[in-house]
Image 1 (cartoon, one colour):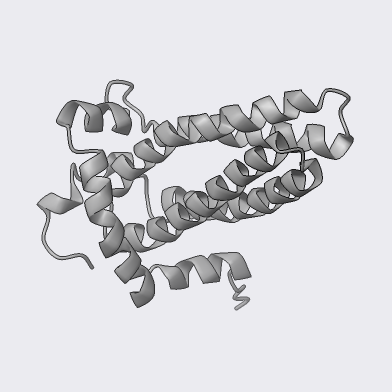
Image 2: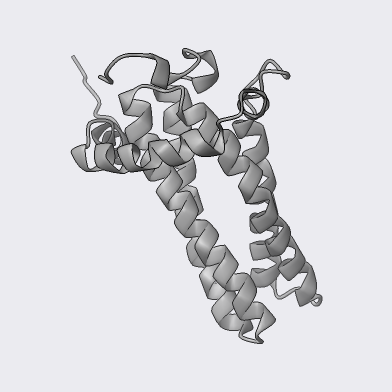
Length: 188
């Protein structure tokens, strides 16, 4: 019998599902997510219920696409540096509704989703901080440092995106889970 081992990134993501450290992080993030998504109509909209489909995966394409486009212009040395800066800034603005939709979905998950989702949120927050630093550095005339900050943020975004895929494709779509994890008993 030929048993193949899962790829390393998959094994690492699976280990995160039971991490006690991430349990602590998830417990700290839960009240924030609850507060930000408290109004029922807002929560319903953030979950994508009016669309019949989770909203977060749809929204993620916007900041990621804007940031990737900005990085491509940076790396290619596009003549209009301001175009890359505008794309970067628009991605920063698009991150807020994307994060809120993610928080609304995250609340619906079980303990494994909460733990992996907590790291997903931390990585996204760190990437957003680096993208924001990049924007500020560029505005202050430190373009090279700004580009370096964006490229580092891109790496964090890619790692976080992998975890986002793990959340949806391995742990199951939050849209299809129970209405609110807070309405259930203890997490597995």
